[in-house]
Amino acid sequence: MAVEDLPKKDWYSILGAEPSDSLTELKRKYQKLVLLYHPDKQSADVPAGEVEVRTQRFIEIDQAWKILGNEETKKEYDLQRREHELTQGWPVDAQVSLEDMAWNLSKILVTLADDHCYSLTCRCGGKYTISKNEGEDVSLVCCDTCSLLIEILR
Image (cartoon, rainbow, N blue to C red; front, side):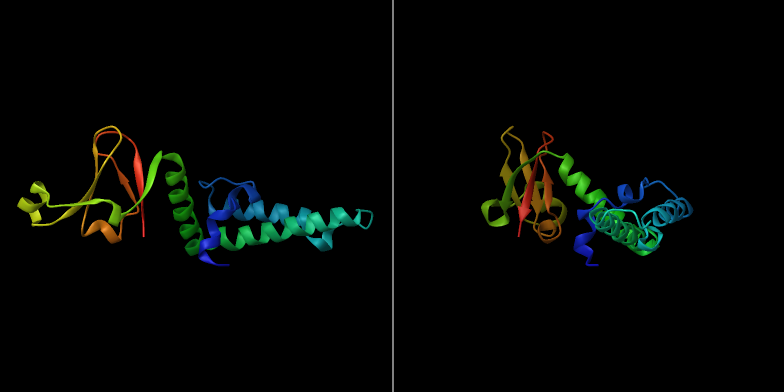
């Protein structure tokens, strides 16, 4: 499964689990669901449409376990999930290209590091500021006065 596909589904809810659950607890929940949805465990009197739904559910449960049952992929998924939650929770005011921001020689930065910065005035009157060095790494910039953010497009 591709790394960029990880945050698209909530693998914890598929297993009926919480991010704080231990690996043992995740495994227990996975095994309980596998017994319910495994194609070999279905009774013969289940309608054909229901069999397809249960098979699809089993596949999702198996995918969830493959991600959450491995420490590396679980850690990566948790980080991506947290990043997604943070970007959804903040009020992004605009999407801005670095080229649309003003190129300034900041007095504060000159005295400290002799550096330049990009800036943009916020609608509250504050400023979004990003140094030249941060320009490649930062995707969200907070206003220095209010809680609004801008997203830097590359």
